[in-house]
Image (cartoon, rainbow, N blue to C red):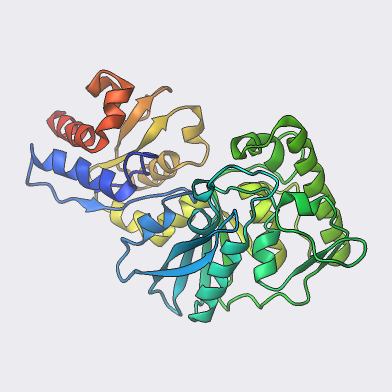
Length: 366
């Protein structure tokens, strides 16, 4: 059996959730051979999931956080041929949970670029950059500054960090950007939003980052101005602001694409990195799960990725979720922690205990 859940946001990491499910199953049936493959979708928890990979090593570096205060950011190095892959998580250096107070116009991604520089300095052959959970809407310009790009106003003066600075962007210089590592850079996105417009980074996610309606309009206009300046500076390789995922992490995906990074579906890339398909070969069951199973779960999230790979391998799938708000017809079994506990608050108060209970319940099923 393979256990491959996402994290249960705010209550259990993917690794801890998987271990609890395994413990619950073994309390009923100790004969089963269980392989744990903790998953993530390119947002928070990605490095925790990949840190469990064979040979993975965790690193840390002190960088500038999204509000200017110093933070210690972790990343993971995977031992892969032909050279090490560094897995970097934006939330570690520039995440919204690092903000003392939300400041949508001032928050930035400088720290992310500093972590990237540290990984390059240690000889990373390839970078995987998970960009979920950002505090800012700066189009990735903070990260690009740390990598050598320049963003200036009409008088040639450097812009302040954050979305507020982008309102005055007139020119972009990319000739100073550090080279990409030999194996390239892949940005792991967990959303498909474009950079600007009604479904863009500012309009959809700005309010979550503390932006009021006027600030949302300003940030959207600033990102549009950034795209215009980028197209002038790099007409032959400017990223497409309308590309799916360009608006991920306040446009950080767009900014890193200017550096030369490729955008990829986060859950799929994580599944490849942990060799999920190999683990599913010959398995009799896979258990996956997340905090809430709803209509978005089938849109490229962990549950849908695990489900599609299990279907290709002919392996039935059981679902465990904190709450289930969508049909579960395609699953061999489905367990809601809220139903087990009686109340959502109870399930969230001791998630690992209820995950163990869910594992035991699944083991009792025929």
